[in-house]
Structure formats: C-alpha cells, structure tokens
Amino acid sequence: MAREETESGAIDQDALARFDEIIAADERIEPTDWMPEAYRKTLIRQISQHGHSEIIGMQPEGNWITRAPSLKRKAILMAKVQDEAGHGLYLYSAAQTLGITRDKMTEDLITGKAKYSSIFNYHTPSWADMGSIGWLVDGAAICNQVPLCRASYGPYGRAMVRICKEESFHQRQGFEILLHLSRGTKEQHEMAQESVNRWYAPALMMFGPPDADSPNSAQSMAWKIKRFSNDDLRQRFVDMIVPQSEVLGLTLPDPAIKWNEKRGHYDFGELDWDEFYEVLKGRGPANSIRLERRRKAHEDGAWVREAAAAYAARESEQAMAS
Amino acid sequence: MSSPGGGEHETWPLWEVFVRASRGLSHLHAGSLHAPDAEMALRNARDLYTRRNEGVSIWVVPSSEITTSDPDEKDAFFESPKGKRYRHAGYYTEAEGVKHL
Image 1 (cartoon, chains in turn green, blue):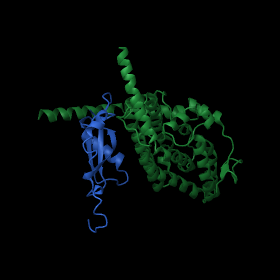
Image 2 (cartoon, rainbow over the protein chains, first blue to last red; image 1 turned 90 degrees about the vertical axis):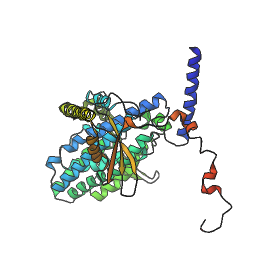
Image 3 (cartoon, each protein chain N blue to C red; image 1 turned 90 degrees about the horizontal axis):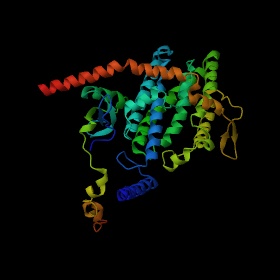
Image 4 (cartoon, chains in turn green, cyan; image 1 turned 120 degrees about the vertical axis):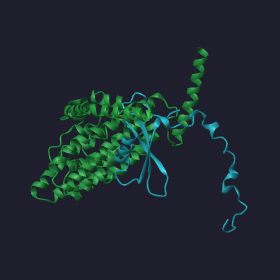
C-alpha cells in the first residue's frame, strides 16, 4: 500500500513537471492531458460562469426584440441574441471537456449555485440601452476576451476565437444605435446620454475587483488562463471609450476622467465596489427575474427534450428491427 | 477511448461537428453539440456553426463513436517518424542553388 502511494505520487510529479513544461513553453493543455485538480476546477468555474453569462445575457436584449424601432433593428437584435445562445453553447462544450455535464451546469445555474456576470442583473428600460449594451458591455467583454483567445486551455481558447470574431459586430451595432440617437432629436440625444450614464460604471466593473482584492488572479495568470490583470484591462478599456464617446457626442458620467500625460493613460474615478458586491450576492435590480425566467424556460422545455429523446429512441429501434 | 466530454449522464448524446468551408476543402472539426438524433444534430450544427456562411456541407458524428489514440502512449505511438529527417526535402542540402529542384 505504502509503495503504491509512492508510485502514484511519483507519477503525479512527472505529470506535473510535464504540465509546467507545457505552460512555460506557451503551448496548450488539451482535454486528455493530465492537469492539476485546482487548474481543472478553476477552468470549470470560469468557463461555465462565462457560458451562463452568455445564456442569461440573452434576456436584457430579448426584452427589446418585439419593440425594436424598425425591421432592420429587429433583425439585427435577433441575430445578436442568437449569437449569444451560440456563444453559451460553445463555452458549455468547452467546459464539458473538463468532465462536467451540461445537465449539471444547467442545474447549478437555475438553483442559483453558479454565478454569472453581474452586468446582466441590470434592467433595460430604454431602447438606447441596446446601444449601451453593445458599445459598453460588449466592448468590455471583447477587451476581456481577446486575451482569453490565448488561454492555456485549448478548448477554451478555441471557443474564444470564434466568439471574438462574432462579438465585434455586437459592439459596432451598439455604437451605431447610440450614434443615430445622439445625432437625432433632442429627446433622442437625451435618451442616449441617460442610458450611457447608467451603464458606464457597471461596464467598468465587469473587469472584476481591483487587483489588490482579486485573490485568484495571480494563480490564473501563472497558469496563463488570464493574461492581464483586472486593473490593466479596465485601464485599456477606459482609454478606448473616452475618444469613442467624443465621436458619439456623449459624455461619460465621471468628472475625474482626464488625460494623464505622464502615464500615457486616462485617469478615472473610484468605482462603487459595494454596489458590485451587492449585485454579485444576488441583490441586484434584476437577479431574481433573470434566474426565474431561465428556470421557467428550462422547466417548460422539459417535454420537448423528453419527446425528442423518445422519438430518437423509437426511430433507432425501428431501424434495428427492419 | 471515447472523446472527452461524452458523459453518460446527459439528456442527449454528444456529437462532433465537421464543416466544409467551401468546395475543394476538407471537412474540418468545428466543435461539438448535444442532440437527440442525427437529423437534429445536423440542424443544430447548421444553427450553431454556420450562422455566417461558414460552410457548404456538414458532417455530424456521435462523439462516442470516435476512437482516439491513447494520450499516455503518445511518445511510443508517434515514435516511428522521429529521427527520420530524410523523409523531408530539407534533409537534402547538396542540391542547394540548383534550379527547379
């Protein structure tokens, strides 16, 4: 018994050395490779949360499909929401290669055990919110996701490549919605500004807490899952959106935004992290609505899943018999 | 061994999707999805992997039907071509400078 333990311990040491070697060489870990349990768990948590965010993320925009102001905008919005369903499925598939089932992930989501991005717990009361979500929320997501294309876990990186390709349309269409509103009537311009005022801070918080309060970041960066820190990505995003807001003719609701010649970056003000943690804990404006709708959709769809499985079983029985 | 992710406790089985981008090219692995049967797998694959004209043809294969080489035997399994550089054109350097060769 003692000898066996030593043996398996030795094998693990070899496997760990091989794993470290692959990471150090900037190669990719693939599903059948040995990996530390903590690496597997971190990835399952991150990828499934990411998938859940895409799936829940359909709701704030789905809210406006029937009320989009033109047939063109309706078609665009439907394509975008369909993409988000697709992105959720790519990510769930990537998570499954780590040994968790789709059913388990769905269960964790609808029982409230799993988390998803807090940004989707805000309401979308105006049409301009479709613009702000595209420009700011998808913009922040792209900022986060582009480096994830190089994540050390192969299936995650591959899913992200596909997602990033499709996501750039999302950001541009949002920008265009805001641009048209901003250049429209006085009321339309105000609608755009009011929406940007609401979405600015939550979008910046999408990058996660400041580096000093983000205990898991260092390990994720050592494993090359994460390539840049939360604060670095947030800064990069602010540097992008300040000039873009000028093109839009809209202002960002932070008086502290100012070009800092010495740093070569825009300075910006403190964010309200108490709000972030409140929403994360489930006390955001729309947490319970989002989860309830997802749970209902899953339960209402049960008969479809059962019927399709029963049909497939009957067909294959008949094929065997004939 | 079966392909990873093909868990037994799923409501629907897992399928691997291969997409041909255009005539003259091979079908390439695009990803995977769940579906109750082959016909639904094809339709789901169309919706999931070809929303932007990425393909002219799709194959779907049950993940459980795929046989893969054993990753633990990787070195032994792929040993044969190693050290056989003479199988590559670059091994033959004396023809350097000779045209059309």
